[in-house]
Length: 627
Image 1 (tube, rainbow, N blue to C red):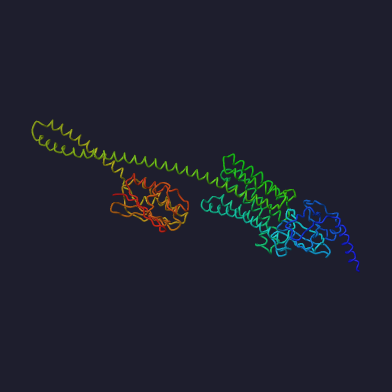
Image 2 (image 1 turned 60 degrees about the vertical axis):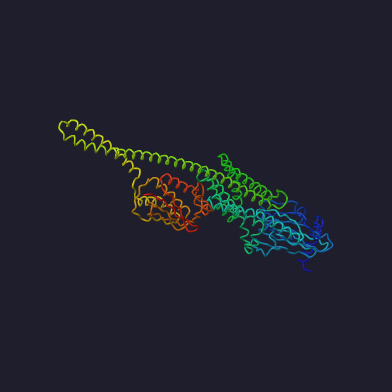
């Protein structure tokens, strides 16, 4: 017999004798679940130099506890025995989705069998069992005793769960876990869609940042539950090892951007905004150090620095009276508790029993829910402020309309009185003219020169007074009804709204006109501003045309648009305050006050408002100024 073979046989016999003194984990075929951790023995290598032969020959190196941080490689030794009367197959669940390195050996009566050999770039198909979580198949004959040796290195030295399942029970366990993961992902996805719709409707940056937070959480959850490797990149093992680092950085990035946008730090708190920007700048630098040089301490330092930063910021915002800060603080505190504290303790071996990957899922869901409540509270506060502003604007508009109506009434009354005085003066001029004829006859007689001269002077003075009264009435009437160039007024209105139309990509055109009308330029300008502003706000594409048409009863100033239009039957409802057409309400634009203000101004000025519209074909609003 060769010397090397004899040495191996002696070594194997020594190992069997040494193993016989250790307690072996008894297994029965078809068992649901067996906890193997109490039977495991550990050894941590400072340098990855130990071979399997040395591990088999040195049982005294293995201790009941291990987990020395910073070890280059970890060894695990587990003795098992089939206590049943029939052969059995089990799956050793390691409790992690992947490992940086994993080699599993089974020693027994049949010699040494390699059950797994996975390097950092191993593909998904190289796994010993085709499951999303790492599991190693173990087969034992009836009464067979064997030892399992595991040489491994996991991300951040995450501990192995070490549970043995019958294959069918393990499949059922993964199926139940899939249901739970689906529920968590469903909640996060629903919140993401809600935030995305709110962003599209309101344009608030906080909703977009929340979408980033939820998406990065979902990506990380799919990663540490093993779905990404199995379904997205099964042939890219090296990338699968680096993906968690990128995803964790994205979570920190999105979390910081959410805090900045939620509290509007750029405008309200510039100093805190600069601190957040500095943190965002350090995140990619930290990622480069980790991936390039393998430095872990900058990552830990960044995580530790973020905790007081975000908590202090939340407390500051809460003291500023921002009610949404309470929900933000609650979500952040839950995230820190489950993801940083409890999950970190589990990685170090001091956490609660069970899979450590359950803790981040709890933290993600709770934080996402609290952040959604913070957004809802902020929107509720903003909506209340907008409603208060709208009520104030409506009250001011109604007050202004009442003042202008009263002014118009008083002007009409004053004009009527002036006209009455002018008419009376005109009537008085007739008898005065008759007196002048009689005076001429008296002047022809001798001896009446002095009397006729006195009467003539009195008549001249009376005539002067009456003509002055008529001139004042005429001047006041002309001042109230000032003849204005409608073309000039339309050109000025187009100039005021040209930039807003160009910003939306709309064509604002004016049809030239030579008509003039006696109008109040201030009132007509306000009416045009409301109609053109509404047309620009609710028109998505096309343009707006303004012009003047002659009507039997006057001149009609028209505003045409290519907007969504509405049913003409809704005209009376749309003239009421805070009412909008269906298309306008769907896009949540405007407040429904424009037409109400236009109607009030027309009523007080004696103008007639005309409305013509068809759904999908635009609208036409007209103001008929009487001749």
